[in-house]
Image 1 (tube, rainbow, N blue to C red):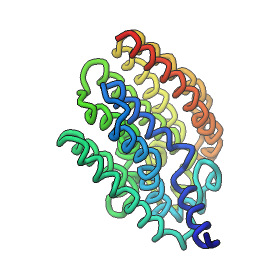
Image 2 (image 1 turned 60 degrees about the vertical axis):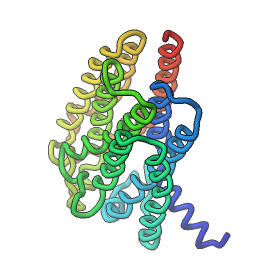
Image 3 (image 1 turned 90 degrees about the horizontal axis):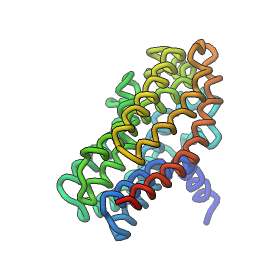
Length: 292
């Protein structure tokens, strides 16, 4: 392998945010299995798709079109993302598209009209978030709605692909997950208020300001905790899992815009909280499956 190809692979890997792969693959696989799906081809293909190609499309396209903002962003260059070298922009776009096409085609063939509709919404939301003209990420509130769709739609797709329907406890879980996703995106945008404003990029945080956006995130986390109570026992225990998130971002509820980068401490905690939360959610899912 040449130095050039090694550099390209390193950039593509970094752009896909490996630390976040599980955040989309896990919801799909968990929903598929809980809805009655088995360890079959659809599970394997879907999990692999939402693990890597989906994330490359989501974050790779974003890195290409957010290049100017990323140059001003002090948190880039870590597990939170890279500044994608301009020489690899075209390669990243092509790699994103070509890696997604075979998986999407396979999932369409393995699924139904309903699951294909969900998959279409999921992929379009990923593209619309960062692509020129659409740029949903620059439309305050719509940015958080779209970002949450990125993570909840794989779960909805898994549910529908397995022949399930988003009703009852499943609907409550999905709505709670969606509110959690909106809260997480909104708070994540707080640390970038200065960099985004300097780059002329709008977001829910540049619109509301750091303090009010943090308070919105707190309210959304709390709402997620209330809604998840509708899943019944023992799923309702997941309500307590929002508490660490609220406690973590509570100190930033009055954060001035000029000190927005201090919110990065809360965001870093969020990344690690997700690992613990994922483990506990898994235990709850096992308990739910055991009681059926």
